[in-house]
Image 1: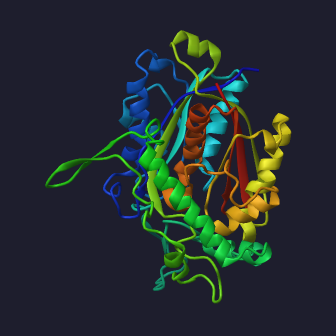
Image 2: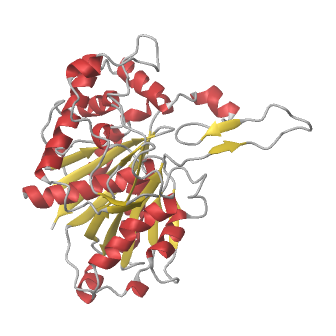
Image 3: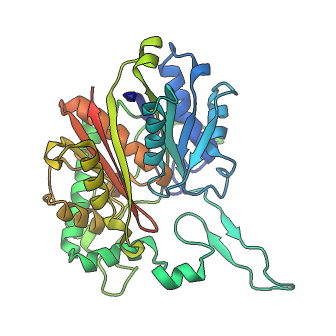
Length: 400
């Protein structure tokens, strides 16, 4: 069994829906952090890289032909470096890192790149083929997020609630108030803005060149955060997902674009290519939960991974909890026995402020946690997130 280290990790800034990154194809977007890793680590013999693992939740548009492989080629990796695209919906990027880590831990690989990409702005509409002759009622779906081509038997057994509807279910079942959700969302915005002002994302961000007809500009900062957010403004937002509900656009994550990539290696590869470690991957675990309350998934997933690695929640110095919705974030914290405002949780804000490009987000959580450990002098970080159709995923990393 080999130890596996995170030697470098970078990400693009996260773009708003139809925002700064919307002109960039998913495969081109995915290439950017891989290219940055190549440039930042010139001592590596990239022909010896054994795999690129990339998470991507959509894969219905420009990301449809194994975006890991396409992005690798576009980034300039040698053609004999293979690539595999994983889809565990929101957990895809974290699963990609975990899959690479497991391959290295087992001794089957020495070095890999892992991460994820999502262009939700460019997700296409899809249309089903006719099921009968002269059919004049074609099915068409927007693939940005959520269900399409629903299985009737699955719907009858488990329902097909949209993601915001599952957040409403969680709020109702776990008694999460609208006021608490809005306060949680405001804290996310405030922490992210403070982190941006302090330059705490500098280590992980790479600039993206945006070329328009009139100019070329550098996109250098996450554009989803709302510095002007207040409890008053959040309280005025409508609850469009359920009459009398509590989930709003303000206490939910965004629909976003972005890409992230990490370089993982064992000790032998680190020595051969003069790499240094930021963090070590200790373990990863996944669980299944009721699809209608998918947002609670991080609670059992966190318990499972902590038991796996023999550590406690009290030993975690940083906890990166993906904020799909404030309701599920709060429900998870309370299920784990943590305070709503535990200072270890998302110290630089979370997806409500930063955004949630589905296939990228898990890799982003690990990247942000690793640099936060390095900056703060902490030892352990827990990264965890909920997953559509009822799953949870969690990973523990250790600072080096």
